[in-house]
Image (cartoon, rainbow, N blue to C red; front, side, top):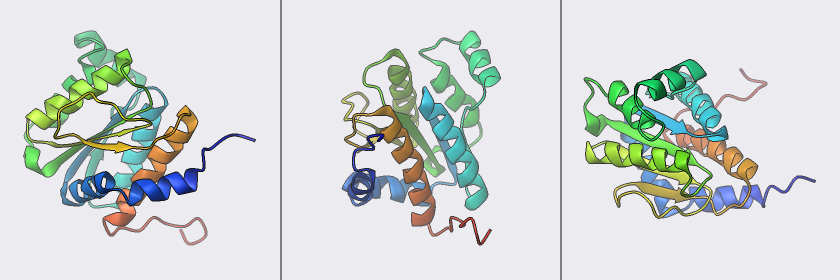
Length: 182
């Protein structure tokens, strides 16, 4: 059987943590939310952004799609592409009404470092920031709210990341529809 590392218990622990409560508060106050990840978490961020947009009154975006990513990487570099994407998305917006959330399973990989770089940039611009990660990542400035899952498997982290985005929607007072009542 697939090891999900006692996922329901992990979920409850995370949702009741002080760091997740800080993220929930940032999400509740934000008008514009930018979600991004790398690897499988890029798909998690895109899925979460679509559902957050349709189930809340928030403007939520993710840099999904290979055309977008490779185009921006061609214009910048692998290290800078997420930062550049945020620069473009934040044009004309009040940073104090924005939230950037990064999802990562890896620690100190090339792509994880690009994610941290983008969060640092956003934080420096006055955007609320959070990193949801499989394990504690010491990178990033102190303003980044670090939600740590304390898991070992990529699949467990990615499932938890998506589940936590539904908790953010629910915690902001919006309804996640059931299949039978849709």
